[in-house]
Image (cartoon, rainbow, N blue to C red; front, side, top):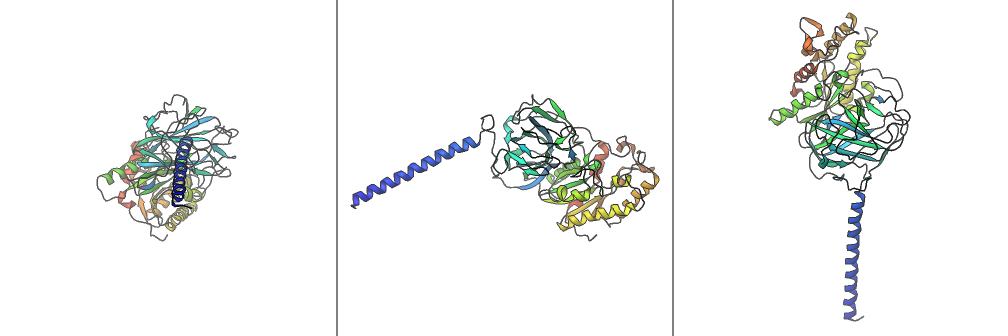
Length: 443
């Protein structure tokens, strides 16, 4: 081979490499465009690629799956778009969601899901520029087996704190009962057909007081370094708080923590998520398999310990065990159950702040024997033998002239559940410094 022939071969090889590289780039660009197409052929807003920004993953909103929605046993919500409205108590630069099919009896196929900022309070309309299509392990569709859940990929979206967020899902096929959190104290929406990325909200004529499928919204946050889980019953769930106004005591606690941290106070930078279930007990499960309204003991690992970067659990649980008691010995069973929750938390290095049980004099379930049990449980809690630290909700709400009852201004009217002012007072009673540190007590 002559030198001239060698140069010619080398030039040809270089040209071939360049041509192949260009082809790969063109195909890659075309593939990116194709993979970004929505079901309607439009390129979806945003990207579900891993977030580039720094921060800590924390819970911004959560709700426990409680049971199956009546009337959805046969077809679920096939052929309809479900738009859940949730309130982000902590802001972030990326988000991910958790969808649950815990009470489904067949696989749930979601072919289209999105997240967006709400255009305002009480509306199904979204801010169009914030609409993001969600993916699951890189795919737009996900099939969640009966009893299972799925966590979306992170998507870049700036979520301000104190902002309503819309999470929308579409399932084209029957899936059996819909997993819900009732008593949401928030109106969500439903539309016929796949309207997942519809920003105007006009097709969303159906209204619902349930949260469906959705159980968590996490954010990559520079505002918070960890998560506080509020774990309890209807008093934590906020069943008597004003609809759509986010006035449950965990909502107020989240606002207090954020404001105090922003002002430079010596408090931890934590988000707060609400894992309250109306009617929940420490010891007893509801009916069904899986159990609807599962006991605190059976759901603690899922609803408290599994939250992202959880640091502290605040437990306000036990009043339903009291009202359902049949024996004076049940008081010890309640405190033993609460200690079991604390041991689970301590095994994870978490601190547990526990609440005294609030008065319920005047409620239809009240009688002197049950009130004695409540006061005995509270005495055990105050003595320091149950939790790492104590917040005295009983002292904060009771009427000093009639301690078995709530002060009337704190009473919603049913003599068991607080009013908005009562919930605010509960949150303001919790000394924020109690949230510092880790669990250490041997109980």
